[in-house]
Amino acid sequence: EVVLTQSPATLSLSPGERATLSCRASQSISGSLVWYQQKPGQAPRLLIYNTSNRATGIPARFSGSGSGTDFTLTISSLEPEDFAVYYCQQRKNWPPGLTFGGGTKVEIK
Amino acid sequence: EVQLVESGGGLIQPGGSLRLSCVASGFIVSDNYMTWVRQAPGKGLECVSIIHSGGSTYYADSVKGRFSISRDYSKNTLYLQMNSLRAEDTAVYFCARENWFPTDYSGMDVWGQGTTVTVSS
Image (cartoon, rainbow over all chains, first blue to last red; front, side, top):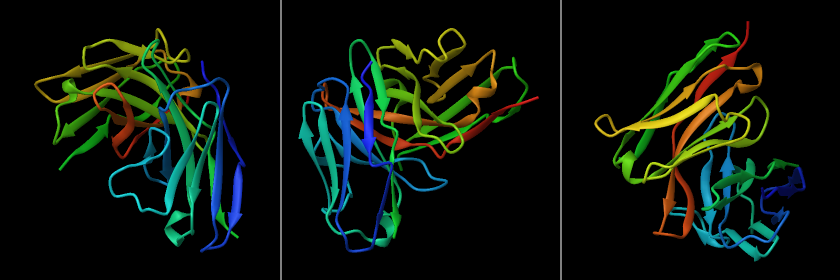
């Protein structure tokens, strides 16, 4: 099973600053790396799929990159609504498997 | 409108059973890969079960042999039958649709609001 490790656990930033979130896989994975945003009391929201593709309606300030075992989610300039928890996730079709990272909380400094 | 609505959660004693339901609108459950994802209080996300459009299923080791995923075409509904419940199954349970194009994975793009399961005596 692929283990995803996210860092840092918490990121304290101010609105307008750049956020860089890391997701490291225990083994090399294909492009099926996905990022979600979750706010308190809400379901996760799909942000990025296939490492770097923005989901429908996601602002351009969100971008994803990486390959192999190291992946990054970047928020170019934090808006007030971006303070939330972010999860990375990978999917294997066969044998089937779906794992999440432990999450990174982006909080207001 | 494409949406998922879960129900069936509640307070249940250890060893008991519950069946969660997830009603879909705007798309056909049986034509899609569907998942159940749970989130224990204050914790991260965990995939519990997946059902493929062809009917094959996957379970996390933590629930294998106790949980069963199924769907009803006529009701356009996804289910999660949970037996032999334990305190560690306490969580918010979300159903979600997986998006594939057609063999490239594109994440879970539609989520329900979640239903809370509390296992306690």
